[in-house]
Length: 314
Image 1 (tube, one colour):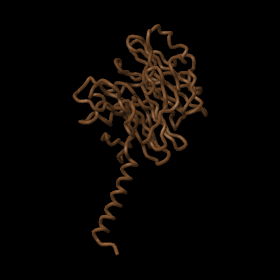
Image 2 (tube, one colour):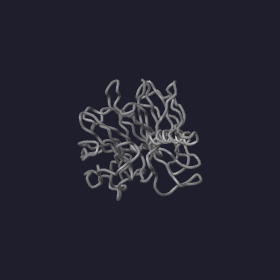
Image 3 (cartoon, helix red, strand yellow):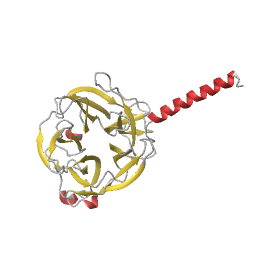
Image 4 (cartoon, helix red, strand yellow):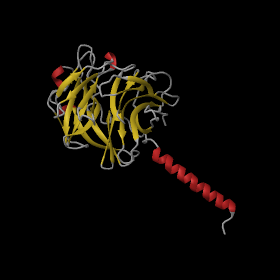
């Protein structure tokens, strides 16, 4: 016979174990590695993050996971020495950052920023990839070149589920200007530019996703090395506006500073939405901060009216 105190302890232990399992399943990715500007993809039961700085400023790598929590550094996708046009701007040093991977036409396409930027015109390149882990081959020429106050940085491609049209969003930083183009079906050629308004509080790192017929343009605001860096969003009835500013998604708190440049993912496995973003850890004060940023994955919730519940960082 089991005594009541023992039974109560057994039941409590079982409840705590169940709660712990639920929390673990919803917990963010471990923060054991550096990275910034993550793009976030999923396919065939695996997850993929494409960050800046995981292979140094001259290389871009993919990170893979079976469960969104345990991540392993994967293949090198592209490097400066495999981009033939890299030296055409005459700059003595170059860098790669802010990659974005998209599937189309039975292939995958990797878009990336090529610096320096300001005053040297930054550029956006694109490579065709055999799969989510590469290998990737650069197209042979810049897709977009900055200039006249526009910085060609932070590319993000969105294929509209309604029209199947691919849109490229890019721009920001000092000029803080958003520009949008449609791509031709080959995904490596610009079709045309579409005039759009730059949304309120926009700095850089635009990302587009669609949910229930509403288009969500999210983006970084503020200075990336300071606690002013945060994620805002606007909604629209189309991929190109008009934008209705909705507020902040995530901002600095007492523990973590400067959450920014991010991507959303609708997980086909559980039907939930997730956000991958980067932030500074172990920093105090308003900045500027030095060192490396970490990237993290957390679930996102939407209210009944479609607005996003502000994220509490964990």
